[in-house]
Each structure stands twice: as structure tokens, then as C-alpha cells.
Image 1 (tube, rainbow, N blue to C red):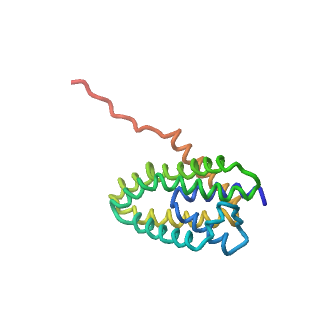
Image 2: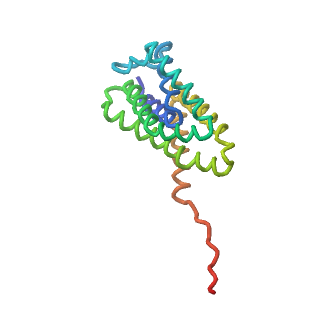
Image 3: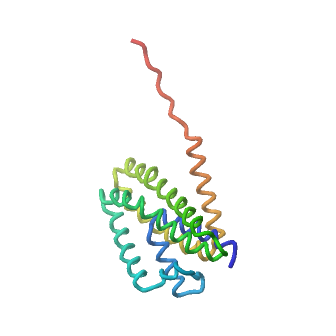
Length: 192
């Protein structure tokens, strides 16, 4: 048990903001087949075959839905509820490794982290990609999000301090850009 496990919980919940099922699947598989994660009750149910099977099925559905034009926007609306919930579950399940973390606190923290990442993705990043590329950039961006979610999930378990540093860096960049967003100067209006 280590204090670094809280970084694991934050990294996994941030990953859930990009793809709800990848971090849940990573946690389930690592808890079942390795000693890297030990899930306590009631979270140990994630290691059962039926939960792993459902997570694989849902991962495939989300992967495909996020690559189809128009369906990807509907998927983002549906995922507005699913991703924060997945973040809450994965945070609460992994945060208990550092001791007695109040489950409600873990659920709230995971909900906020995953919800924040999902909001930035679906409200800022994806509309900008759609607008600037006419929708052509959505598939490559979606694939990059899936790859990032997978990488962050594994790194959160294996080297959580690196993920913590990356999360702080990305959060700082996003907040700085939002705070110091410069408005384009408007041309003067001529009197007629």
C-alpha cells in the first residue's frame, strides 16, 4: 500500500473521462491476473468473467459508435452520464488500496475528475475538431483518445507519479488557456 495509489485513482478516473470502459477493463484484468491491483469488496466483483465480458462488449460498442459520424455525437451525450459514473467507480475501487477512504468521497472525486475530462472533450475539443475539419478529424481524434485512455490506464497503475505529473500539466494548460483566452479585436464600426 502506498500513497501513490491515490495517483492511480485520479489517473484511472481521468482516463474514464475519455473512454468509460477502458479503465474499468484494465482494472478488472489487472486485478484478476496480476498482483498490481487488489480490489476489496464490493469492487472485487469486477474480476468476475461476466463483468469482464460485459466490459469487453461495451468497449467494442463505444469504440465503434465513436467512429461513426453523427452517432459519435449521440454517443457523447449518452456518455455524459456513463463516463463520470465509470470514473466514480474506478476511483472508489482503487482508492481503497491506500487505506480507509470514505467510499462517498472516492465516488465524488472520481465523478468530478471523469466528468471534467469528458466535459473538456465533448464541449471544447470535439466541437473544435468537427468545425475545423468538417468532421474528418473526428475518427483520428477518437482513436487518439482511445489510445490515450489505454496508456493512461496502464501507466496509472504501473507508474502513477508520472500520470499525476501529466494530469497537473494538462490541467494547468487547459485552465491557463481558458483564463487567458484572448478575444479577437473587433473592427471599428463606421458611422453612416
